[in-house]
Length: 168
Image (cartoon, rainbow, N blue to C red; front, side):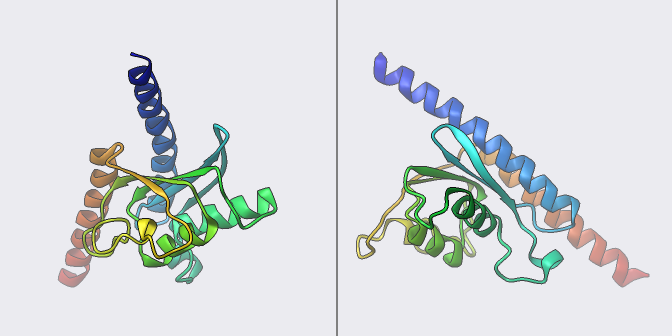
């Protein structure tokens, strides 16, 4: 029974922080960016947030995870983010997965998977390769439907916008 209470508390906690990651994704969407959001949590507190800004900043590195990692490292004064959990609405790409390993983040909680570019289990699983000096625990599918719907709606609207521009 005690184990079940812990699992229930963990699920509730994961959903709470994933909802904040979704809020961050909506900030990206407001900029007409692919709606991806991330938050980094340490000791039960959000220490940094990030959302996709690649087009806005004209910067390949401006992914949600990279922004959250950079801000957390600056706040903590260390590149090592041991003891932290990253919540991200979409499975990290190879760049972000590599940064997660390099930052030594303990746990990654993913909203929805990315079969075309994901490197936390879809194409590769860089987060749990035994050959690296660090592996992160991974939880997948937290608020998956909400995270997936954000992306589906975004790309549907983008295709419609392109079609309308083509017709005019």
